[in-house]
Image 1 (cartoon, one colour):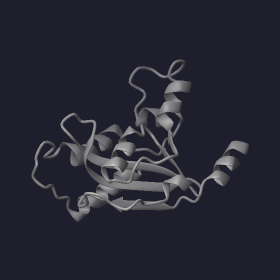
Image 2: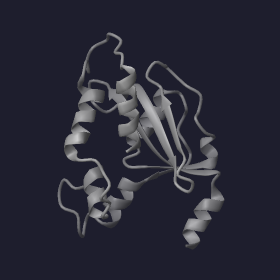
Image 3: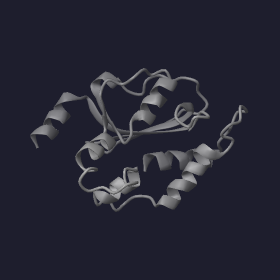
Length: 166
């Protein structure tokens, strides 16, 4: 418990973060950020930010005082940079821990994905691969290479934020 107390006392907030975005033609760089969702690890409080209509936004938190936790933080870093937030100072990437500690001994090829990792750790309350793919179709694959503005309905926005939170 010492490490957990150290983390709690060292940061203003400890936030799990996920982002959703449409990517460029290389499928690696955020072309248009849709949203950010944060969950405070200690309080359970959720913060949702819909960013699709914006070219930049104000920082959601003072990132220098927060520990941000993500899975494969390359996506989050790209989203922060795309929205002109800069690069957060304290980012913990849970995928790196999984890869370094467990992959060589226990994990099979193809099991570094978030849902596979959750299953490996016994997390049962998660979405199915089909639900994930349906949401990715909604977010990433429609008008992917179009320069025309793409609009999401209010219902789609809610679904995307719900997916991001999950």
